[in-house]
Image (cartoon, rainbow, N blue to C red; front, side, top):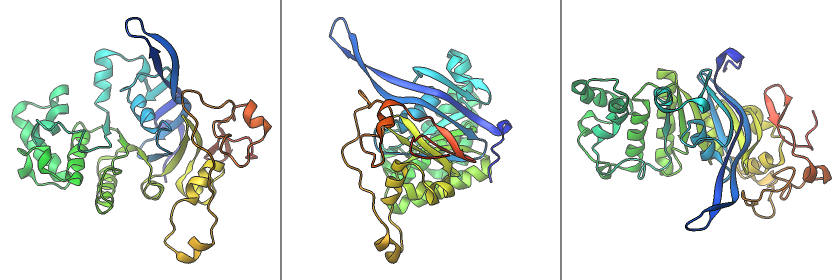
Amino acid sequence: MIDTSPENILVKVDHLVKHFPITRGIVIQKQVGAVHAVDDVSFNIYKGETLGLVGESGCGKSTTGRTLLQLYRPTSGRVFFENIDLVSLKGEDLRRTRRRMQMIFQDPYASLNPRMTVEEIISEPLVVHGVLPRKEMRDKVKELLNIVGLSSRLVDRYPHEFSGGQRQRIGVARAIALQPSLIVCDEPISALDVSIQAQVVNLLEDLQEKLGLTYLFIAHDLSMVRHISNRVAVMYLGIIVELADRNELYTNPLHPYTQALLSAVPIPDPVIEERRQRIILEGDVPSPVNPPSGCRFRTRCPLAGAICAEEQPEFREVQPGHFVACHMVSV
């Protein structure tokens, strides 16, 4: 059970907004619009927990993770990490703080430099932050390889000599090299074969227990998110529509979008699978350039009423630890 007291908050995201400008013109560029990638998102991540972040492609999950780490600077809002306001940090102060926050990227084929050896890839953060003398670097890399389940004899090989699962393990070794508190896992298993996905997830769980890590786990696979996460946040078109404990969310989804998502998850019981009702959403996801007024989900929601077009629903706590943004959900 995760301690959700205020003293145990590792990351506090407060009304985070990230818009990407759309410009027109060659010599003189003029902003003509913006992509509303993340719009007023707030949540906490507690020490030692895994917060799952799920939603359709293009809903803003990866942008949220990158903005949290300040890889993208937010349009507005605040991100507090260990009570430090990351948005206000610049230069050397931000670089020092980044040692405590790392990222595992989605594509293990694109996130590793093909011209660098395994030793150079994993030792790069150690070199950048100057935490180890050069003569100790090779031994540290071998130790990290053993921790993630790879042979220490592979230090002089290049990324093209490894499978996708092995490359992702190298990415994990690079992420834990600086002994961070927080790791943002940006769909770390979506590019891997199904047979390899469970191995990588089990590795992440083992490292969390051994090293006391905290994860923001971004994914599409709702079954895997339920397996690895303590709490789950559901995102739609730049906003979080529901956030709850994993068991609470999966057994008692309150938002219509969450209900539709979960109805599409296969159940390994043919009797239950045959009886249950699928919720098929009509229409397409609106453009983040011009999102709908009021509730973002109203154009596809089977319960939408007049108020849904006029007012944006408040993201509120309707049950202990269970937050939802929907006018049709009663307290």
